[in-house]
Length: 148
Image (tube, rainbow, N blue to C red; front, side, top):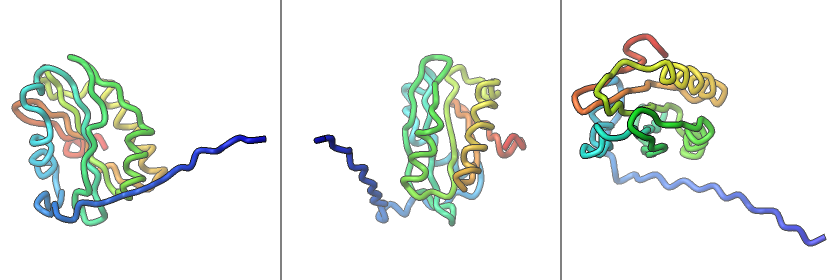
């Protein structure tokens, strides 16, 4: 039998030069960083899902532009969210997505996703720090509203 098995490689190369992002201590800190990651020309046109990954001290390890959607929704895969967190050795994650309509109120889908990710994070010993909904004029924090 001449079957081969694919080798799985894992690598992680943190960018230690990028210390300017600092640490995240609050939703306003997260918003300050995240608003720069969203394309301002498209924030009112389509939904996008970006995740910040943090270390134990709240320092940003990096971000992942995970999913892109349409005008009114974006589909998210929890395996990808958690997989990147595990690969980067993150101890906390901050979920974020934008609402092109400008309405910052979370939808039932937003609430359900946050609950599912929180459960998955708990199993993997990763803290779900927050989930932010952004628009071109502000943000909504699930943590600040007691929804995490």
